[in-house]
Amino acid sequence: MPRKAKVRSNSSRKETRIDDSLRAGRSPEQFAQQAGIGRTTIYLLPDDAKPLHVRIGERLVIVEHPRDWLQRMRERGGVVTKRTKPETVAEATA
Image 1: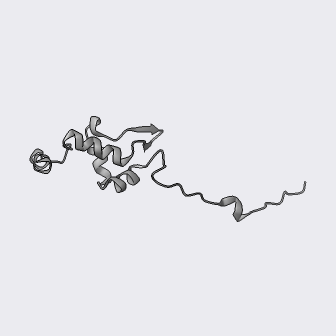
Image 2: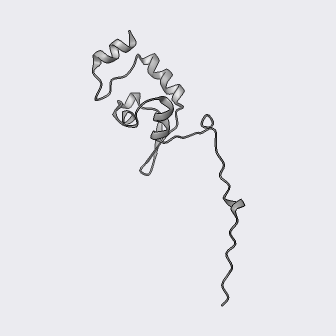
Image 3: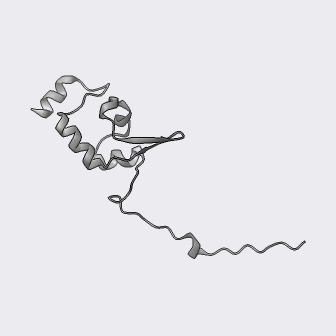
């Protein structure tokens, strides 16, 4: 039986870059970088302060835009993580 020839074309491997402002989901690393926080800070936030997200298997996909999350945190008056000292938040919001 004859083997089928494999045809490789670079044109079929075009990468399409999506503008971050149009992206529907972000990895924790992308979100942290765009929000100006550390990646581990996302995991240390209390549940009601975490950015809106979904879990797909083991992967965490953040669906809230960093700008919207920062606005929500500002309206809340800051947030205390497991590592943050409460007086630090009080000084930052005063």
